[in-house]
Length: 264
Image 1 (cartoon, rainbow, N blue to C red):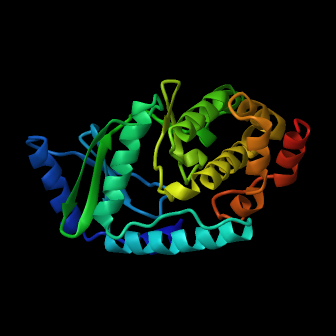
Image 2: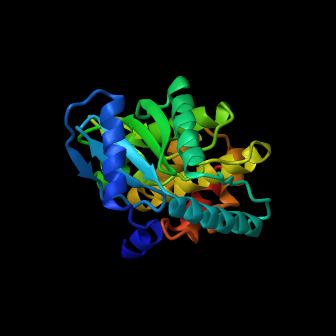
């Protein structure tokens, strides 16, 4: 976590105050209560204003880290025998704009996501404003039986995105929130449209890898098979080793392969 903070950087307090004032002015709020979230996040400083708006502040350093992560992931994609498919955005504001647009598209196709409010630029930083979902828990903080019950919905949402030409690009349990027994997807990244097929297989590998430590490989693959056919599961299998070298994934790839190949 300390290393993430180092890379993410610290936004000067006067700039954060300016962002909060801008939010207050935009939504005609006379006062603001601000809570900072301790998120496992490389790419923004997240905060909550008045228990109503979730605000992500994206700096130039966050954009630089995104460049490095994108390059590293694309190199990893080559190791799986495919061209890199992750995209980088030129400015912090473009990063905020993309996430706003991706969140809108997810909601349009029936994937639960926080309501997108707006993206704007402040002092060279990108600022994304979304609905704040209170009382949420990340999927991996829930008991195994609850995760297993929700797992078909995870793959339903992912499949809806894929059918609409979208890919999540950064599927981790931290990016699946549960509030009042409803699932929400957050933090979709960007992939190149011409490489969407590989990106879908990568997404599916990430989801299987995220769920395997929580519920085991057979239940995870079984939930995925409700929405993906065997050829799609086999395509995802090709990305398991690549996904497993990410520092935010750690799963039994051999167990997933075994469960997939039983269906082949």
